[in-house]
Image 1 (cartoon, rainbow, N blue to C red):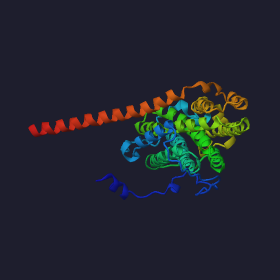
Image 2: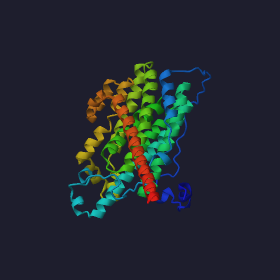
Image 3: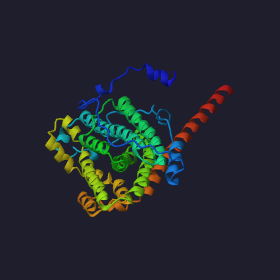
Image 4: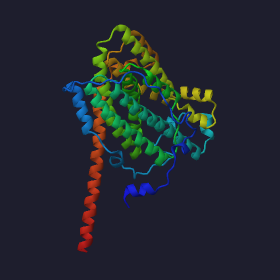
Length: 379
């Protein structure tokens, strides 16, 4: 039966039926601010951005076809997460848990992580559309239009994974929602770049990469690798556009952007605890926060999550004394010397290698099938 027909006959399950706790507001409305800008100069524009725009067009793909959705996922061990990486590992709570309880905990943590990815991708889609509307340069509008499509595809993919493989979602984290709201409410056209392309996308890339490189499960690995291939272009776009613009700003204007970055980084650092998950397992909020703070794995996770943000912020020209002190306080200052270009080249290579391996495996299976049919015919 055709896949589209089979899927059409499956019973529809509302997303709201799958939320662990319902969203605070089913439809979140952020008042629009700032101007829509039209540019009547249709000359070629900047070669770098137009080359990225061409790549954005060339690299469009279909999440329903490129990803092998027939791969099975155990909802109680969706990522192959080792015990040692679980926040409760080594605590009295862990000692009392049955294997089923531990499986439930893994399911909830993965649902929480991928739900934040999903909500972040919808936010990225809205921000990319806002950039199309507000950025003054036509070449940037062109590229942002391709990014809007990319983010729609990512939201579609994460939603499908959560619906069909985990059957569970979490609402958007308060801190992520706060940063998204601040980004969208600001009337300055560069703020969706800074809030989304640099901070949220940079954080997402690092989180995706850590799971991509550690998971033992093929479906989430595919999803993350292919999404990261797109996201690397998005961060490159933000770097190009903001580096040019921030070179023209006054010290006072740069300080305003740095304050936004500092606040956003603290928000995101505090977001990455998954306290909501532990609360769902009956652990009081203060104790859940304390357990998360004491987790060695989460300490490492949170530091590595800034591996894409800090060098990008430095690269675009936001590197004032107050910002540097904030990064020293977070323990991530040394990440400013990371090679972003190398990291993004690796993202591209990993996705292409996955495609190659899948194509070769499928080709081998087809050859074997043909040879088997020939042998049967000869017999």
